[in-house]
Length: 310
Image (tube, rainbow, N blue to C red):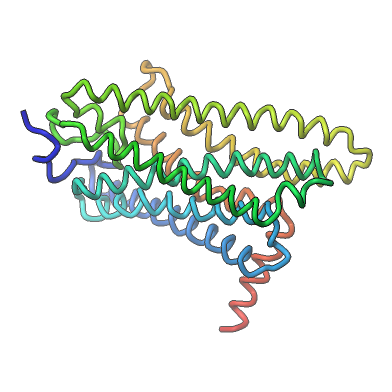
């Protein structure tokens, strides 16, 4: 019985079989990753440089942009490398690092989206207490808790998964290293422990979704009580981008992992995995900047300032 110590590398699922399609996928991934890097980079720079954007909402948005950057930089570069050179391997340590980072950034994003919902709730439902409940120290503590808990959570999952003996080959049915795919290679009943951790994680994610849902029920009740139409529109406009991002995050991940087996196929699974791991980090900056005039203005000033300097 061979175990994980004898495996030096894993074989990832190729995005395409023919050379032409591999190059096409490389170009598509390059375009998406450049859009994500540009969009998130502009948001980070605009919020960091714009003193009028030093508010809780934009502080958490900056953290969300950082997690999106980390998320797309974890999976896409290796996929692009494999598509360009026609390879499909990833080292054992590289796979472990990828699993850790994927969990780390996705868990951070989930925590930040939940915190951002609370920010909108306090802003709209308890405006007089906004400065007290979401002061600079409280925001820093919440952001630090999101990153630190995600670090411990991903460390636990990664250590648990890569301590399992693997004896069913080294081929993964995914274009990046994913825990469910690695568990399929395990020949030990110990994998049930990791499945239990994944179930607990799913319950926590569902708990965050329920919290967000009931919080928005309270928010919409408060918004509908605002007497002026302009006030209602302004309140809705600050909530809409967050709602769209939350919907994109949960719907793509849920459909990818909870779809019926009857409609499952390798090509569909691959398309859905790209959808939930690559598309949201690229779209999130666009979603937020389209609806937020302050952010658009700050990004525009940043871009025109850079062009004027050159």
